[in-house]
Amino acid sequence: MRSEFSPEQLNRISSMLFTAAAEGLVVVDASGRICLENPRLRALFGYGAGELVGEPIEILIPMPMRHRHVKQREDYHQRPAQRPMGQGMDLMGQRKDGSTFPVEIGLNHFEVDGERYVMGLVTDVTQRRLAEDELHKANSELEMRVEQRTQELRTAEQNVREALEVERELNALKSRFVSMASHEFRTPLSTIMSSVDLISRYTAGENADKVNKHVLRIRAKVRELTAMLNDFLSVEKLEQGLVTVNSSEMDVVHLSIELLEELRALAKPGQELQFDHEGDERNLTQDRSIVSNILSNLVSNAIKYSPENSPVKLLTRLAEGKLQIVVEDQGIGIPLEDQPHMFERFFRASNAFTVQGTGLGLSIVKRYLDILQGSITFESIPGKGTTFHVEIPQHHVEKNDPADRG
Ligand code: ADP
Image 1 (cartoon, rainbow, N blue to C red):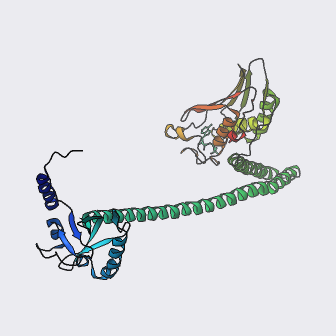
Image 2 (cartoon, rainbow, N blue to C red):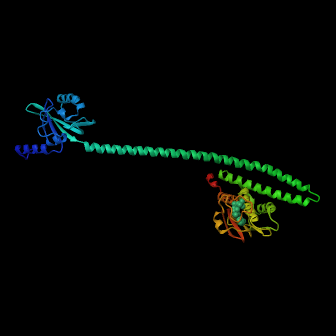
């Protein structure tokens, strides 16, 4: 390709480039002496004009590396090539004042009049190294922080795991205790009950009335205690997911009458237990013991929370594939502010504290109804009475997922 500059112009341009280059340029002869350098190189190394020409190139290299450099330079002269110098190594330059700084060097060789020369292109990489160091430092700090945070998270996770394990053990212990206590307490209670029954047969004479009064009281208290233990056992079973639905054909009228017969023993003087059934059908396919439990919980509450001489009504209705149960009383009612909490475990309304109870019955009823896919609502006027409405499918349909059964 034809140059557009004359040789004289080219000379001037080359010399200008050499002088104005932003990199340091140095030319060294075969014996390693500097024969030419540009102003940038002098500025980099802190020398004045003419100070470097004739000096060995090692003057620009820190003392500890000079000896090795002589050998490297001689090797390069044997097999010269265009290449960057000391790739992957941290090369250093030494200024006139003895201070050092990081450099990058590109090497090239050429011949003039049969003499071989080496040209070095020197770049000061102090700023780049500083930036790299900063980056490195920031990275290490970040890694350290990540490691620290990971460690903290690991410790936190371990703590949670341990707490969970303790919680699980306590829970298992509580479960075992509740089951054991509820089972074991029931046996002596039933013995007490049968002995009380026997005692009541042997009462004669002048103290008969007094004995009978105590017999009745013992019976009532044993029944209360048994009901409480049953509640604990039911909650435990529900919590453990051990409740399964065993549906069978049953007659809701028979079941209700039977239950009311049993519950009559709890009634206060003058408390009439009324029952009515609506609809032609009476049969349903449901879990008998769960339905009994729901009915007896609601009716015994109606009895407990209403005074002497006030009626308790149980109404059952079978229509459109649903069993509806209504339990109505004219008792103490439920204070408005307590009504939203009725189905919470251990919740007892503020007006119920003179009456024996655990606050578990309604929560058990609610959980049972969830299992049967039924529902419960109530309305209550404090001081006037309460009515509970329950709805249960007439025929229980197995759900696919047994884990859904609470
Ligand atoms: P318990 O009767 O053992 O306290 P329940 O879970 O059966 O527990 O009932 C929770 C609370 O609901 C009772 O403590 C009582 O305050 C209130 N309650 C339930 N049924 C009635 C009712 N028929 N009349 C008035 N209050 C009731």
